[in-house]
Image (cartoon, rainbow, N blue to C red; front, side, top):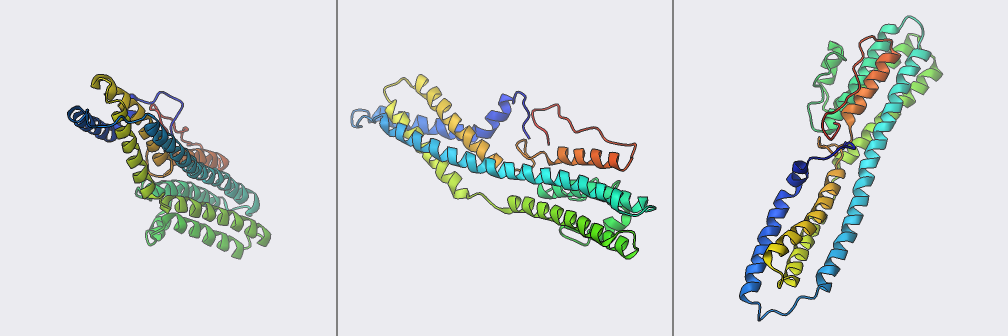
Length: 297
């Protein structure tokens, strides 16, 4: 997640460097072509690149809106995960009978592990990395049998709740309440996985890039009487604005790709870990995740 800090120019240039190289090649090609055939070419009215630029603005506006909706939905999903994770531990402490502190702590730590595991799974990272201190060896062996590790952890939650109910350490109504919390956590996981696996139409990006290049060509033809040393910077600056907006929208539409524009799932999971460990009365609590750069992971 980008922070309210100065974004390095190198990061910005890195995102559009290939597009700008293409613009330079197109501008030079048009300049050479118009230099040789200037007397045979009709004048290109400025209204034509102006019309194309307006069309690009409308397409970019639509894409930015759709991309932000996906990013904001991902953030709302993780906000729900924060709330339900806290609710689960609160319910365990209040509704489970006395003398079950060990299983309450086990489930609380497993819920912390679930948050980290889900975030790493969404980002395509090894889901069980660094979960050893939070999970028992038995839990690690059990989830190793499953492809969907976060779902396997929720299943272990359900098994422990059933055991508490069978041992009469959990009343039926309390069991139903906690089961609803697990259902909401599973629902949040499914929503996050849907965002991850639903691809924004790739052709939309290709068509938009093609229209931007067409705009560059028509604008270059309209500026054929302008010295090239002035024409090229003008083309680069205008096209860079379009490409940066398009690139921002492209990154925002995929909030789980381990990029600076991601939803900060690791920072959120760390916040959940702090909250749950304090609810469980643990003394070793990690500090909130901070960043010395311009983004938070």
